[in-house]
Image (cartoon, rainbow, N blue to C red):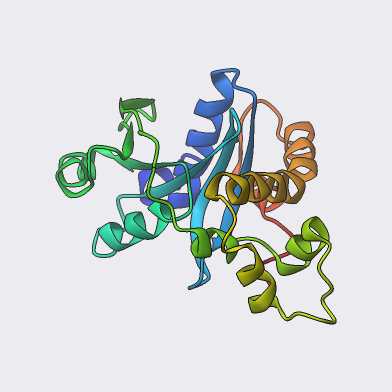
Length: 208
């Protein structure tokens, strides 16, 4: 896998997953989560301590043209946001993203360490969070009929509820979405994560 090195976002994902697992955290990790109104993808999502972390990966072969926009979208939905990148982009990313965004660096020797811890996001958007949750799941939680309401209408029924309640539903949804896959990943993984293992962490169902 070293062949891919720091030019591969997938390789860096694997190194970051191994880094997180090495800390013995109680966590669940998902790969490439679709979220929000615009149906964008976040590289990794980490569920830890009842909070949701969005992880953006930037390899040596990436560019930073969209980074600021990506971060702003993540802030609308997730409790914490962090960027995992290489020494090449370290200074530019620290200058580009706000101080509430966590930054992790993977070095040329493939060691990975934290430069800055993420801080909680307090300005999340209810509608963006609701569009990150499958409408069938929302209908089941709220006992709403999919024959009576369409997906947009079901989400609007939740719009006047507390954001903390909506956040709890998102966390429950993601736990259901990824828990079994993460457990399978841990059984199949071996001593370190390989790129082909990432497919196990990818959800088999998307937002509707």
